[in-house]
Image 1 (cartoon, rainbow, N blue to C red):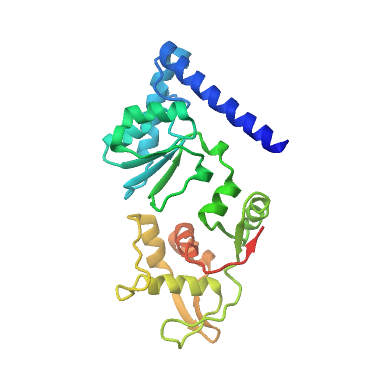
Image 2 (cartoon, rainbow, N blue to C red):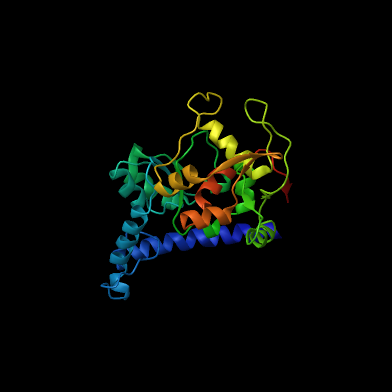
Length: 277
């Protein structure tokens, strides 16, 4: 019964998208299926919706991070946003489970983009993308199913406010709880120095990975000044417990801001945390 309800919901949604695309294009001059972004100088009425949609596209494009070259547009609609990105020099592939919209997007994009005719959770590819874009399609994604198939790790720092975030997330998706204050039995690359806790170990591990002599896992950092300042400002010391880094309160006091960007990067390289389902 549950499967039949899901199938009916999918059919209803696809039908709604088809009707919305046809009516919007012929009655309201709409090229897109997404909402509009209403700027202060734009009067809010249905006849200005196509202008608001154009503003939405500008807003999305302006927030693409530096360094992004390849994009996967999930729920690409008629392909208009993908075409805009292609014209700006990005490499763009699309996901469209709706045959009607896939055909329209294909006619617009031609061989400039590959369109996966499937749901995001069912997509199979060896290709990697710098950015996955969900323009009002994320609410349709079964997050747990998608993460279980892609092997993506969601890691949450469970110290402080992160504990509540972790408790809520684990009800929805597979998530890893990470406590930087926990002890760890590990040595640095020389095999001589230990670590006072996990936070010190993973910061030091990132330091070793960024060493130009490292060939085992070459990595590159984004051009982000906030991240650069945070990473280069954190201080280490050797104690009887092993290598330690200063606590976040001391860093906040010295920098005037929290090293959250640095923490996020460091925890990206957390190895084999315990999976909570």
